[in-house]
Image 1 (spheres, rainbow, N blue to C red):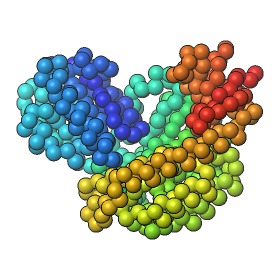
Image 2 (cartoon, helix red, strand yellow; image 1 turned 135 degrees about the horizontal axis):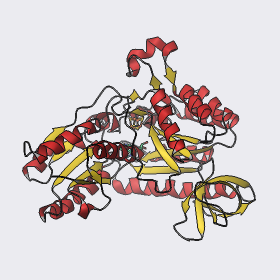
Image 3 (spheres, protein in one colour; image 1 turned 90 degrees about the vertical axis):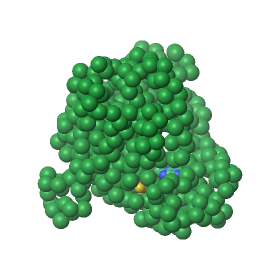
Image 4 (cartoon, rainbow, N blue to C red; image 1 turned 180 degrees about the vertical axis):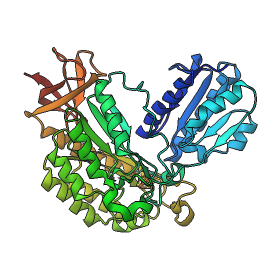
Length: 455
Ligand code: 5AD
Ligand code: SF4
């Protein structure tokens, strides 16, 4: 009989949240979660497909896991998450490396699969069907990941309808669907009662959150606007019902972000003043090829609107460098938009040509890897400069910090974040994890603020 399961995680916050859902499903079915692979009977790998490197890492890991499985250290090995749809399951089943492959909307099937294996009824399960409805609305995720019980994630929507030409997400995670506001608020409340102090609302594109009782699919309900709840309304409901909980959200999309969302952020102190606003490129030509639905100027206007309404709002971005046909001029446009906006921090990636995407089918991945890496380096260096200068501005100010844990570098220091998402470290003194404290900023690096507690 299979008893203990272990989950290895790759990829984004969505996967961390999904692991908590899986733990909840399996523990209700009398299985035990273990955090040591050698104690497990069943090993699940929650996967990511966003870039080739992520998939390569998992393929390499599979070889290692197969070797320990063969030594009978555990019995079942399954792939779940975004790679489910993309992996050559027939090959891995034939080689007896994998026992099952399950897509992100089919985790409720896991107990049945395990039962079948226990009964010796069946081998090699494959189910990657994606759903048109929010699949796990009624399941409260089991919180194991945040040992400090201070910050947590709540998924508000799944999938994406945007079809950016470089992105596999619409194919691996399916159509966009939103969770009911009641379930979201219930989940946030439960977290608050468990002692959590901060929640991050997760969605591939939170700004297009739209919920209606009748039907979860956005396009079909658009006609019944008066009966729907959009993201700004959801945000207001949550911040009103939990005034002592910090609220963050991720990811925003420039083409869908509304003025209402910015106004609600301004209105409520408990909504953190930080927006992750992926720009992807500063070149109009590339934005068009990427099927991003904004121009460089529209993006800049949105940033100016945000800064006018919430002057202390911090901003971060995603940028892809070396997208199909990107020229030196396009790259300069990207560096220039960074120089104009001066982001607080950012996430930057070399373009990875992904099978199944529009770009893969129709465009040429013609920027040599050496050029992609050179351009990436320039973006990283510029951002480092901006981050340093941005953080320097906090020196001598008092920042309200939610303490999340002990600093990795020094046991005598805590780390936490201010509303703007800057990481701050300071000597512990009499404070404790989970406290909201005032910290006077003394110095900074390009990644961290260093301060001391202020009474
Ligand atoms: N290559 C490189 N980066 C990608 N991203 C998405 N798809 C790709 C790809 N094919 C980046 C985007 C997105 C972030 C989550 O990952 O910048 O915003
Ligand atoms: Fe991918 Fe674009 Fe959707 Fe983001 S908005 S998940 S980049 S398709």
